[in-house]
Length: 76
Image 1 (tube, helix red, strand yellow):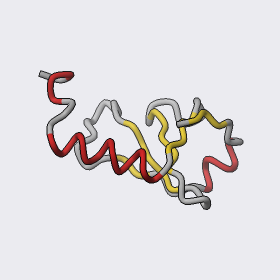
Image 2 (cartoon, one colour; image 1 turned 120 degrees about the vertical axis):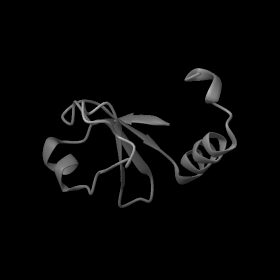
Image 3 (cartoon, one colour; image 1 turned 180 degrees about the vertical axis):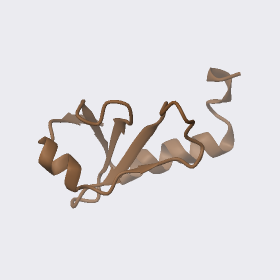
Image 4 (cartoon, one colour; image 1 turned 45 degrees about the horizontal axis):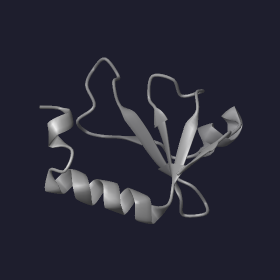
């Protein structure tokens, strides 16, 4: 993972996607694929804020762990 400073223009040009589970108050993260294949992640409430970038492998590991319940204790 690394922090990247995308210009607001560059960030607007990405196709950001929120989870279908996002709640009406906007408490969600958004993700977008970069041209390099890496995945950008940002707070949906602060679209001009910082963007974290993960490799595809890091996102695959996180999503797999979430599906397996590895992080359930954080929200229980």
